[in-house]
Length: 123
Length: 107
Image 1 (cartoon, rainbow over the protein chains, first blue to last red):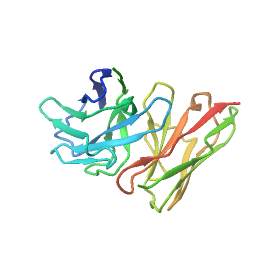
Image 2: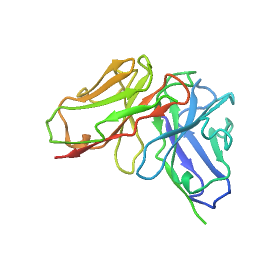
Image 3: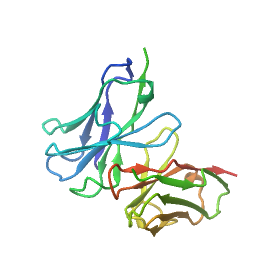
Image 4: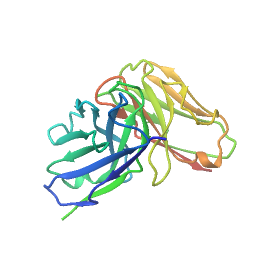
């Protein structure tokens, strides 16, 4: 059964870079032709798609965050990562990683999801 | 961006009730719509994709319908474990966007 797990610092200072990693188990990122994505949810608010990456490294980002986001993949570790630069309090959120359901489709539904990790931006 | 608007924002219902949640897209998205259930402190769970296809393992009391701009999620007989927040998501064009959520509360 495919499982995803986010990891990274829970506290980041304003203006610094948020870095998270999603570790995939129960399946190989490189052997399955799927896109993998990051979604975030500010406390008490709705969901926002951040970006997605293919196992080959092709990326798609939300235009609202594109200038600050980098998503990368490390197939040797079965992981993909998120970097968000110049963070502010508005970036405080639970960050989720997920797989896109349809093979080779960057526009699709998200399933399964990781459990999520809360990142707080504060000095 | 395509705006997804859900109604109502919250609904109070009793166990056994039929509950209907609506999602409207700001432009046509064919059947590129999914529904998720989220319980407090948990990740969203995919219920319905392609507007009306039931994800594996999801109880048959959940159903989805619609195409174009107007979509509906129906819970035919509300169970205690169904009290949660529900989100729609469009996958027709970038960026994928979500509705603001509908909270189903105990009456």
